[in-house]
Length: 468
Image (tube, rainbow, N blue to C red; front, side, top):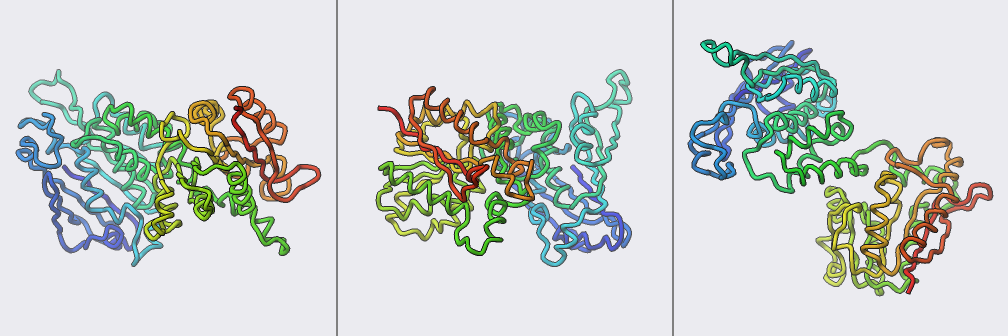
C-alpha cells in the first residue's frame, strides 16, 4: 500500500526536516506485520514528494503473528496487504510520530506554518459511495478527487471496484495533515487489524484535537473508527464533547478573571485563590475526612487539601486523561511523601455517567464545573451526584453572570469560550432550591470575591448538606 505527500512552493526540500527523514536516503522500518519504506521519488525547490510504502507479510498475519487480532480476519486470501487501512495509520504513528506532534527543532516556524500540501492514498476501501471522501475531507478545507477502476474488464456488469485512489490537497500544517490521515483512513475501512479497546479513545482524542469535535460528520467518523464497537464510540463522542480543557480557546478562566485583579495593586490574592480557599474551608468546616474533587483539573484544590490533617482520603476526577497527567505532574506525585501519596487517588471518569467509584465520600466538590456541562445533561449530573453518590456535603461554585459587566473584555459574552451557560444570582438560587427539594439537601449560599453593590460577587458558592 502506498501513501505520497507532496509539498509545493519554495524551498520544498525542507520537507525532509519536517518529516525527520533524509530526502537523499531511502529508509526501512520493521513492524510486527511487515516493513515500511520511506523515500522521496521527487526532490526539487518547487515540489518535493515523500512516499511511504507498507509491505505487509500476509503469511505472518494469517498465522496470528503479533499485530493481528487472531480471530480469523486474516485468512490466506484477503485484501489486507494491498489496501490502505489501520495498518497504514499504525505505520504513520511509528514512522512519522514526531512530525505528527508538530515538533521540529531545526525549523519549528515552518512546522507551524500552513503549507501547500497534496496527499494521495492508493487503494483506499470505500464501500458504499466514494462521496464519503468529500464528506469527511472537504469540511477540513481540502479539495478532493478520486479515481476508480473497473473491477474486472471481462465482467463489466460487476461495475467499479470498491477501492479508490484518493487525492486531497489544501493549505495546512504537515502535522495537521498526518493527524487527519491517522484518524480518517481507518474510518473508510471500518475494521482494524488489532483488538479495539478503551485505549483507542485516548488515541482518537489526541489525534482529533482541534478538528474532530466540530466536524459535521463527527458521529459517523467516530463510529467507523471504532469498528462498530458502539460502547466505545459512545464514550469517545462524550469525551470529545467534554474535552473543553483539552482545547486552548484563548485565555484560561483564571487568567480572564485575574485581569481585573492584576490591574489593582492592592489585591494580593487572585479570585481563583479566594475560591479554592473558600472551598477548602467549607470542606474542613463540614468535618469531612474523605473528599472527591469532581472535575479536578490540574489539581490545585487537591494540593490544598493534602496539607490538611483532617483529610484522610482525597480523589481527583477528570474526563480528560492528559489533564490528569498534568495534575499528577504539578502535584509532584512521584515525589510525594508516603503519607500524602496514600491519601491521594486520581481517576478518569465522566460526571454524567453513573460510576460506583463516586460513592463513599463525606464530601464532593465541583469547582467551576457545572457551567461546562450542556444544559440538557445537567439533570444527569444532578442525579449522579446528589441521588446516586449522595455524599453528606456537596460544594458547588460557578460564575455569577451579572458580574461579567465588570470585565470590559467580556461584557455580554460568557466568561469562557467553553461555558455552556452562566447563571445570574436568581438563577443560581433557583437551582439550589431545586436540588434541595429534589434530593433532600439543605443549602447555604455565599459569594466569593469582591462585592459589587449592583451585581454581587464574581463567584457563587453553594454548600449542600444532606438532610438526616
